[in-house]
Amino acid sequence: MLSAQRVSVRTAGRHLLREVSLSVRPGEFVAVLGPNGAGKSTLLKTLVGEQKPTHGQVSMHGRRLQNWHPRERARLRAVLPQELTLRFAFTALEVVLMGRMPHIDGVETAHDYRIARDALGAVDALALSQRLFPTLSGGERQRVQLARVLAQIWEPTPLGERFLLLDEPTAALDPAHQHATLHLARELTRQNVGVLAVLHDLNLAAQYADRVALLKDGAIHTQGDVYQALTAAAINAVFDIHVEVLEHPTINKPLVIYSPRGRQDDHRAA
Amino acid sequence: MSSETASKPFAQSPLNRRALTLPVLLALLALTGIAGLGYGAMSIPPERVIAVLAHSVGLSHNGGFSEQEAAVILHIRLPRLILGMLVGAALAVAGAAMQGLFRNPLADPGLIGVSAGAALGAVAVIVLGVPPTLGSHTSTLLIPLAAFVGGAIATVVVYRLASLGGRTLVATMLLAGIAVNAIAGAGTGVLVYLADDAELRSVTFWNMGSLGGATGSSVLLIAPLILAPVLLLTRYARVLNAFLLGESEAGHLGVDIERSKRRIVALTALAVGAAVALTGIIGFVGLVVPHLLRMMIGPDHRLLLPASALLGACLLPAADIAARTLVAPAELPIGIVTALAGGPFFLWLLLRNRQHGGSF
Image 1 (cartoon, rainbow over the protein chains, first blue to last red):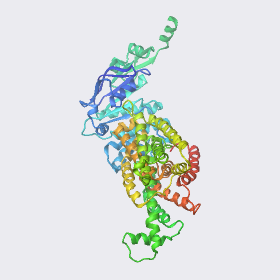
Image 2 (cartoon, chains in turn green, purple):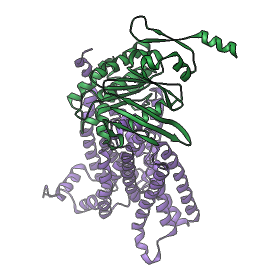
Image 3 (cartoon, rainbow over the protein chains, first blue to last red):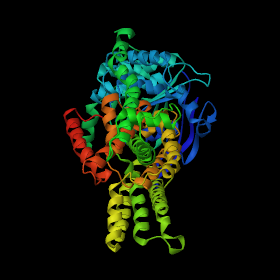
Image 4 (cartoon, rainbow over the protein chains, first blue to last red):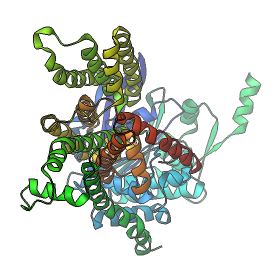
């Protein structure tokens, strides 16, 4: 389990996070939602050890994050950044092979190449493998980066169950690839990988997540399964928008729709 | 697409080119060596250069060369050639490492303040002189020492400024480097203002670089100080690759970021400091060599670092041949040659790069 216990982060007198407790269990998909500046990225950085909490602690499989050797830590958890600028002319395949870095000491073996190509295949980017990364489009880059982090945790390790953390993985993607990416993350949970994704789209979260945490002003406002967390009242309180939450017509999940009527009421009241 | 067809292009030209890189550069290095030992005021043909070398290491006992040729090669040109190779390798590897660490292909080993600090140290000794108690003959030793110490101090200052608050910010390091370079430059300027004509001439020549100070003993002294950091830097090749993705990403891939940064900067400062101490400032090698290689073999530091060392070791002795022969019997400062050749070449790279969409 990857868990933050009563974590606070304070910089320059501002609380970026206050007393946040959140955990990701193996095989579970957790979505973190919240308005801009709510602390989603800070929470993700804290969970991976990039940001040291001012108070509280983060542990992975019961061991505090700072007590893990950086390399062992990297063998069982991978992080997809929001965006990544790489101006040097690596091929897509070379970028994906970098995901194997925590597992090997010298040169990549045929096994690493196979994993890299499988990972590229999994994100529908095998055809890009010889393209130079800086020449790819935003969405293509995002998929190649996803392949890199998949290659990093491709195989089970004796160190414990694996975790995948995604910071807005769908931001640069077209709808088909948005669903393909989250579907892939969902598939990984079947291999007992714990997934945490920062998302902006309420309905993507509703469809793919097991649990949702709504973050506002650095604190968790609501946390629970999709029906518990994605209520009209909670969404209104966190995002300051009016929505209706319906039943999705074909799957057993909530469907959030923006409600202009609520907005008109607001105008009238003003 | 099956994985077989996807893997095929990789097995063709780029891989072959990569596999050939180091053998080709080694051959080039051997040719540079023979040329460097043969060219000069007294021209010695390659077969006699080889005969002298073979004789000196005990591989052959028949002569085929004159005593004078042997003396020129072994006592005058060989130390100078080896110094050129060492310094060229150091500057090129240091440049590649800095470009990787700063994720900026325009970075130069001088960015961390080491060159400007070294210049300040050297100029201070040249202008303020050697304390009379030490005797004037110590200045040949004291100038490199002061340069080395000056470079080290400047690097430590830059690194400390960038590390305030626990984390070393690479962007701050860049800016602190610029500031420390300016301050050291101002210090050098004050000293130059105070200098008399003879000192001024020494300062000017130090700032343009020269391999003329090479002697057998000075090369032996400097060789480990350059070779050790250069070899150790090649061990950080994969770490530098990861740094190109970004510092956070390198951390997520299991790199101990702070320790790696500290060591890469320290090794770079050591290599450049030792190189500059004996030769003065030689520009453009550290900037151009990794750049040129990246265009030919790609940005993977596992090949880029050793290839940079070899190409740097070829280029600086080649520039020295030009410096010695272009205006013979006089000698051009080698820094002028590298800047004259490197400047236009670098402009060409920049323009070419703009046409190719800005990736490196």
